[in-house]
Image (cartoon, rainbow, N blue to C red; front, side):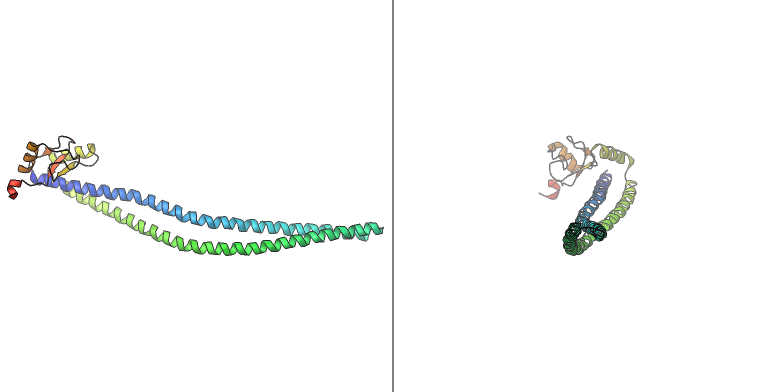
Length: 242
């Protein structure tokens, strides 16, 4: 029985380790996803500046179209001016032409201003892209490490599962059945290691008589409170000379 209980305790350690690895395997993709989201949020800032660039270009294009329309209007005024029959009409066209030419000058100044803004926007984009590239390298390296860690843990859990299967073949069927039933009922913790006078899982004090039996024999005992198998790692004080 002693050897069987020791094997059950070893099986519990294998199961604990597998569960621990599986939790890590579940957590890593979540961490990767969060890192990718943080990285991409930095890139979003660049996209916002690029939107400003596109708006600048569209506005300049519209201003240039407005200049063409005004020039067409001026051309028509000139044609009409050449056909004018009175000095009053002639002067009126000159005034209109002057007004439209002033509008062109004002629009051209606006275009120049927007060209200067465009240069500033491009500098900002280049700056932010450089910063993002540095940040992205850090994020990508972390993600790469996590993916490697994920692959390692998947390999590890596969190896641990094989080791566990080999161990189960060594355990008596009756003990294995008890362990498996408790494993399902007790959320994966079928074995409670007793190192003191308390149950290692529920921490309830073990009756003195039961504790003596656990120490002095190699029989299978169940915790009277939590119902788990008690595995002793506590020695008989009389045997140790204490």
